[in-house]
Length: 332
Figure (tube, rainbow, N blue to C red):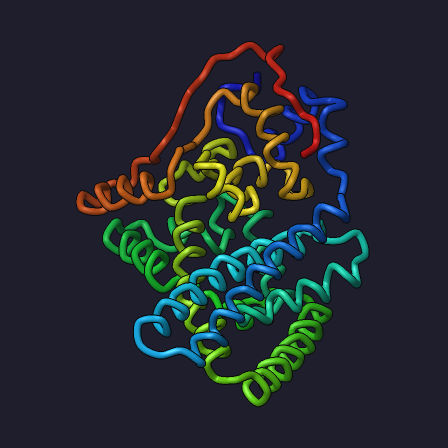
């Protein structure tokens, strides 16, 4: 069992690594076949969305709107997975080859208007400074006024993804290295060329209903996920500053297991397909966690506390389980 006092991420990771021992190295292994399978599944799902969007251009009346709705839903689920795969690339666990990892990530980012390298600069800051005033995603670092804090949380939930898209190239250019700035510029040129080609070559029905109309849905999913991961947590304790959610397996599938967010912050080098095994191996050794079983359930509690401007952490669980209880750690 890890110590009962508040821990930094480095301290928690060191203590847990000692406990897990030989169970940990297999969870760091990259599996090319599994990654290609994920890309094929969600790429195929987007293909379904694009096909439905094309079909909507040939239909009329109720059938047309049904096809449009199906196109938006399928495309949104696929594009949300692309964001999660982009996140894997940011941590260098999408592909073993740095060149392939970067440029596949650039292509994934192009589907949602994001530069891979700009995202990497900000997200690395988030991981390196979680729980401190240098974490760009920690709203408590910006104000000690409850009203302002809750207004910022409301903005994150409602339009946070769009603010982030505008902010990341600006902040990343200021905080990144000269190499980062060159890569960011390169990627936005590539993105502009891809978007121009799409606008000129892709039929409007496909462009609108298979892509653009899905982006606000993707943004909402990203905003809910981001709020749930770190909203109303205890920022000064690494075990309580990130929330793990254990939803229905179908939800976890479409989230590529990023619902295991505490585990991800402790071991960002573990690819997402191994996070369930890491969860099973590590969970009983954590004396306290911030957790939930439902994203909607957390949102309900978030709204309740917002009326009272109550910043009390949600979902804190304390446990006292012998450290000998090591869960199964076989890679997925």
